[in-house]
Length: 601
Image 1: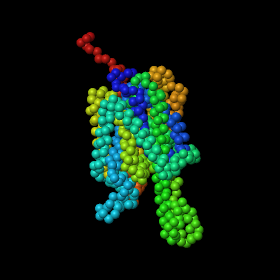
Image 2: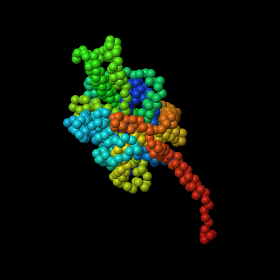
Image 3: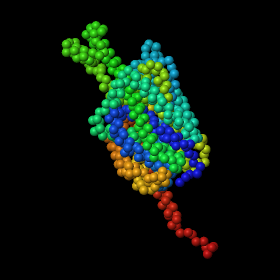
Image 4: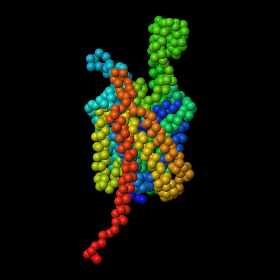
């Protein structure tokens, strides 16, 4: 099934690095550490690694095999397997398009923070002065400088999704820059992407290693590392931990988007993709664990500082209330003095009892506070960075690493759109440069909506709903199609044709039984969660309170969520219906009797 004239990777190493650059993304840095924190530290690694073997690795292998065998993008590959399955590829393209629209906005934020890192004082380290120049800005005072910089300076966020405003010029320019770089990296297809991945796939590891050395030497880092490596085994009995492990593996490897099929389609026909699938999957999971060690070291540093600030406030409160000498209470004895004074002077202590309860100091509680997503990447990390020596250096390194992780993933996301569309005859006549440029400009123009004052709320909708339910559906149909429509035996022969040997029993059991059952379970879980969840909600920024408040989506937001879910999933049945009608029409045409010419008679 060789396709003449199709470009190839210069070497198998380029393909591996492209897969690593795509799969190892922002989720490894901000989603996996959050799940570890949520589910009892290192104990989460047990369900995570089990799900890697039962679900992630077999499905990753399957997509690489399909791409390499068919030598086509997702639409062409699934249409080759069956005309009724062409909608799978189309659904992958639609989902990848949605992802591209909002994913590059994160890269724009990284550019914004990176540019603001080259200042003598980091702008998220202090509150700006108000217009009267009498003190800090009120919104910054009630929040924190890091929150203020993210929500007000970076997003200029409105108070709800229903409040619309103009485009944030700085963010729009950063988004244009992000798309310009993406275009330059994909303009010549695998020939340009293959060169770029040597840097985007490797440099983040250098930064993570530097951060690891710095992180473990930070004051209080040991508290975070103890928290991570002291597993709470009771969490293994929590079904949510297993479900989160399965979904994290699924999304982290980038299954269902069509990127892996597209990348593999540029391989040599006899390339050993089996070993590559194992290597990339292990690198991806290893990176998640590595990034978690760095993150928990920084968690420990931040939590220890917060805990000691709390103790200091409590110490001052006790000294002032009971008129004690300045050196009477040390930081280490604050909690003992609280018990002692409560017992000795109960009436006097009752006057401050409410303040003591409200400001209760607990290191474990500080470490238990789980934060994910943009909150971890742009607020928690920024908070920690500003307290480090030479914060500008660590800020530049961190946001440059985020940028490379984001751009590396974007290369795969855009390839998942361009490759299958370029395989279509109508698009193949257009030059690579022009077609890639049109795709990037189209995504940029739509993505500008995320730079408006309500843009972050629309970003949240896309992040929560555009590529979750639909991907589960796509991959479930994929594995059923390969196992029961195309057939395991035919798939085995294809693999033998490429590798020289058939896959062993492990792969066949996973494809035929285990992975489909797990995906069906996840699919049912997501449907039940959506139904039981009631009206969808989002976090709206309240500048008076200086915090996010849970708010229900308005009717138009709920309708948009439904359209977002249906638009990609519906590609599968609609394309199958179109193929059926077309085939029926062709059969009817073939059965029609040929007209008899009276002249010839």
